[in-house]
Image 1: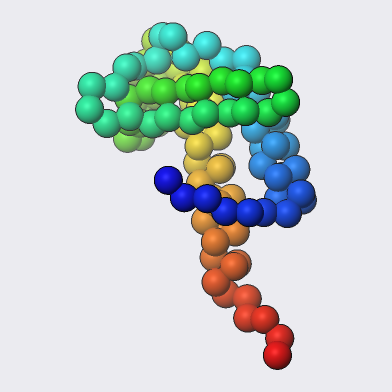
Image 2: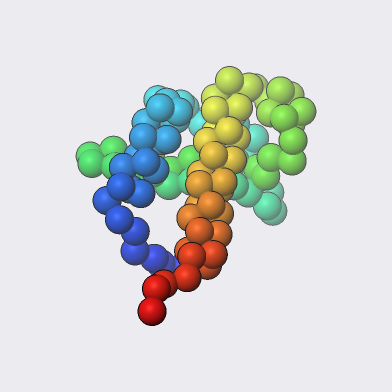
Length: 100
């Protein structure tokens, strides 16, 4: 497990991405359950605490074959957006050189 500290602006942006996705209203009970590899996302925002987990999603074809394609597609795109957001932050951190 890794830990980092970010500015309030970064937290606001992450919160906006999660809120706009509508993932908090999704019911993951019909998603494919993992046997060995899984994807998991835990969201804690204010009084909201939700844990979402499913079998590893290889492609959108896996999503379309599921019992809840809309909810799982929402989860798939949210995880992709969050990964891109985090990788961009890490990339910016190592690319910027402090003055002096």
